[in-house]
Length: 231
Ligand SMILES: O=C(O)CCC(=O)C(=O)O
Ligand SMILES: [Fe+2]
Image: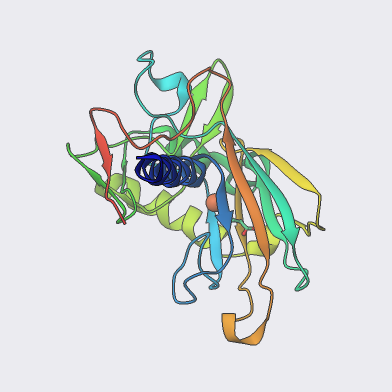
């Protein structure tokens, strides 16, 4: 009897541990090249400028507390970085300055954003602006996006070409123990390629958390519009 109880307790503990690990993966993401061929925070390839979860609404675009929002802030904590590869952070004001008058066209609903393959939308996304002005403060998203109208094509191409130059922003090379916090809507971020997994024993490792001004956690997978595929 005793043995069976102990076995059940151990099994419950294993389940609980797995549950916590799954939650940890949602809230505290390892940023390290696990899949060399992937372009993304878990790949080693060059990661062009982007904002995280740009396909979700900004906090200021919805009053619905239960809908997922793009993260307001990102915090990246460095555990290992012997390669000394930095995170490039590009301020929206630099983009504004470089684009001149055409920047204002980014405020039109001319662009269609797509979620990554791991997140399947249930409804089709509505066209959105790339730049959303909130009480005079410009907020920006830039992730897997295409112009949804002919009118948007020109300004889209201008922005796309500008952002091909990663050196436009500031390269912040984190050392172990350091944390970089930045506003995910006031700047874009990216990084140059990492060494292939085979070439390094201990690849660069950062931990990422999303932080929102509102009490709701940012970018959680479930709401009535989005679901996350398992695996
Ligand atoms: O690896 C980096 O420096 C940036 C990673 C990134 O884009 C992210 O975690 O969202
Ligand atoms: Fe990112």
